[in-house]
Image (cartoon, rainbow, N blue to C red):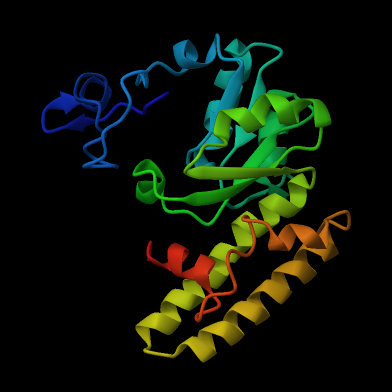
Amino acid sequence: MWVYEEEVNGKNLSHIINTEHENTKYLPGVQLPPNLVAEPDLERAVCEASVLVWVLPHQFLSRLLPRVKAVMRKDAISVSLIKGMAAGQDGTLQLVSSHIAQGLGVAEVAVLMGANVADQVARDELCEATLGVSHPSLTPVLLPLFDRACFRVRAVSDVAGVEVCGALKNVVALAAGFADGLGLGSNTKAALVRIGMAEISKFALRFYPGVDKETMWESCGKKNLKSPCPSTFVLSESHKY
């Protein structure tokens, strides 16, 4: 795992992760597996990897993509977990996966999106996510890397739909957090979720006509709507804010 080197209490963060098996700054209290090795040298971390999993703020991509492209294996597969959209060169919105694909000069970048909070994933609490991968041959390669007893992953071919849902539902999640802060009830939140998800669907179909409406019901879009408060996915997201 490439780790941007920082100093924490007089020690390098990579040294702390590799010796204490804990990210004391960003994920305190969670024991990391000993086979997870923190590598502060980007080129060294990338050069022999057959799968590149992108999990970092999107604003750093433009600076890092040329460095990764220069040393990566030509057959390396990329999977983006980055939520959000980037500004294209023509000023339009661009999916982060498309930004990565262009930067690396590859045809496809898969995406993995869900309504999950990092510390709950790390503590093996049951989570769900959706893997968007358009090329059928990549599904049996990537799915076993992520699908686990406590982290259930379902693969679909609708990459754009998965990524749009993963990005825009966070806007609805913020609104749900505001509703909580204002002391509004579950009826208001239910209406907010319904309207928000309808707008996400319209946005997706307007700008990405090939999107499958069924993707909205995957983990990247809606979670369990059978609970008394029909906004389970929003509640899990709003805890961040």
